[in-house]
Length: 299
Image 1 (tube, rainbow, N blue to C red):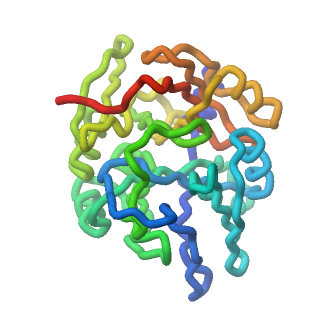
Image 2: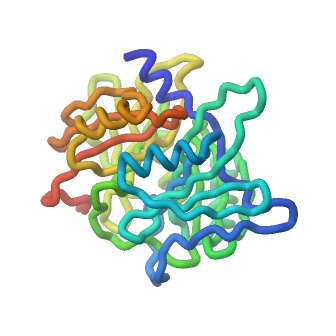
């Protein structure tokens, strides 16, 4: 178990900030097609995988979740848009690992914000490191990438095509995001300052914290105590895909060359939850969610 948690925690600070190749901007797909007028500050609206083997990643996620892919290439830069039911669910970005480096591929979490430049200023004032300054990407919108004060990497995005609607994610779509961090309450204050979150205390194991971050009366993510200390444990964002059967899907992950990092177990809401990694090592979660459950919260 300790080796599994270490593998999960060692998410490298790889980001998909290469929006240009030379002087040629990449033409990334829009978040919403057709475009929508709505925006939901604080909502996780997109995720992007940075991987050293794009073709292998496409095979794995395609077989696991039924995603289909559309390739986008500019010069030597390779990118693939992943879709489910004709709607974009993720982006996959090819990046070779530097020689001699042991960085682990990872998923980058994009959180909706109304003003990227203002968010960048506020994040810097609150102790975050700006990894990629605000920049505009054709079709995508304006974005920036940060490392929060405790070390977790995330991105903010104002989508030029609007945000996904407030509907329940279908199986194969992203349904939840968790910030694993050394001090959840302090980190929650940081994210509250950026996104205006309401913060709710939830029951947790002795010595741990479990906080829910909400906006517009919807639960958006949680901040949880990192399950360990030391040089192998680093704060990170972990994103979960909704599945019908976490046990079966975790077994399929292994059959397709991935690994189980945290074995399936019953979560606090009664469904099964698991943490796995793709064949290149990028971690992500699996979460069962019943149709009768809601992410709406009340003050």
